[in-house]
Image 1 (cartoon, rainbow, N blue to C red):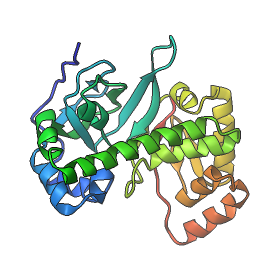
Image 2 (cartoon, one colour):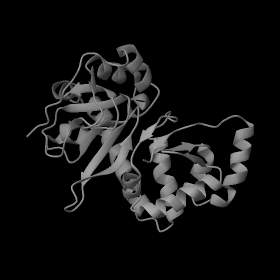
Image 3 (cartoon, rainbow, N blue to C red):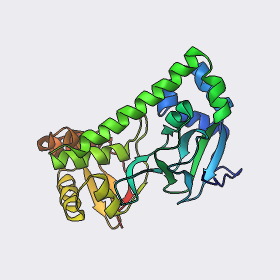
Length: 263
């Protein structure tokens, strides 16, 4: 049965604010201005409370969704274990294109990790924009981007370098799209371990290594991104250069702080 989305007409941001966000971050920011304007003009702002489903596995397609404010859990079913978080979407993240394009049921669930605001492009509006070759080409680019994201997750999970795997997954959460860094991530320690295909003990060990190298800092119920370049180096297997990179970046005042609940 389709999810009964409880949309609200009291968005946390204005339509102008939403336009500014999608124009500088994520898939739509990299599309031609005239196409971006057509998408935004046909979209509406919708809000979801923490824990609400935008859609669930098996739901019929209802169009495209782009995150403006908040965080989203992307959940998949793994064996008999029920829904598990496969990734996290931040502002600029778009989804729903495959189900809309091919008219099949949703293959994943999209859950609001915190109170969140999204742009919703209804299915009919999507079909109008996709009716011409150029519009279809632009939406196909989102499908390609989504496939690349899924492959990146798969590469991370089979990476035998566990330290690089954890750093890469953290990097994806802290900076889930171009132009976006510095938002709070809300996730349990168990879910973080699941995201990296590791035990909670091993996650703690790897976080401690990253903290010692200056890539992150930990506090009660939180992890802060101390230096983007350092975390990138760890994700690329260059952790021996982390401390020096961190010091150089701090000296230039480029630190970005991001928090994630690990309670």
